[in-house]
Length: 429
Image (cartoon, rainbow, N blue to C red; front, side):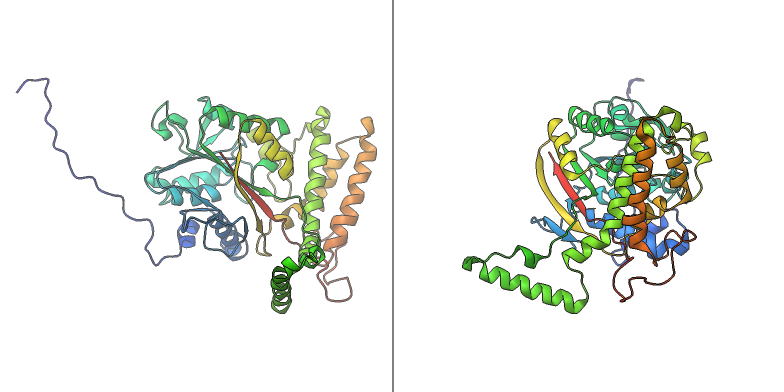
């Protein structure tokens, strides 16, 4: 045999063992792989995972709903097995884990986020991602993280973090490989600027991504009841009777009308808009950013990493604004819809707590009085007092700042109950 010839014996390919048994609740697997405080598991962590499972997973049937609740079985976005997924704005990695389970052992998920490792509560992003990579899902090797933004990743840049030592080229399998799908799951509101949102859509389009799955909070409040929209046309009589029966059934089971749900969403709505305007003002005043609400270094993050000190919402764009930017970048809407939130999701409460905190007041004071900022500051305070604090008295948020312990509307109604904004979703192609 020639010395240059090498004889190889091909061994049968061994499939990796399944991560979960058929009888195991997928939530149990996700909980094992995600760093969290056990006391928060039931009220916070499990609802977040169930919500993301509702969004992403293998398709059960071909017909997908445009209007959905959190209780359906069919995922909004069917993620094909073995897909290459780029998650933009992955944070601590809850959605990254759900996506990794959806693509399976043959797929790849790269989560990117520009935030420093110490940013986030109760565990920093870096610590949370390290935990995931050391978990049973992470050890499969189909999950990676980079501290980067989408333009840098698709152009070959980005700082490896939490085990992503090969960079995105190693993850995808070669320099010419690109992600099939980009996911933006409640991340666009937290971008530092509208320009970054626009550039993200542009670079995803140029980068060869085939689909964009987008989910974000919806600023369109459901203020009117179905009965207010009834049509007198006789041809609609059967449909109106159906709506009437649905409303009666909802009342019997304690479900809220659209108007009632809209009222319960207003604290989240106003808290988001106030944070958006605050961020705009701080961004336009460089001197006020010496202790930034959007830290761009690990040192800055450590200084502001106490619970309740970090402003999340920055751009708070509407669906119309986001879709317009995507279309301008060359994307088209393939499917779209709305997901009705239930009271298990606490994101709205967290945003409300921040605008009722001392940290919010400190941020207002950093604006100074020049350039009309003094007037703007007072207007923001008035909105918070009337539309946020005035609506949540008695529900345990903002304690120590004048909130009571009981329902103060005097009639045992829903005053003070906070419901997250509904979420809209769009599939772009």
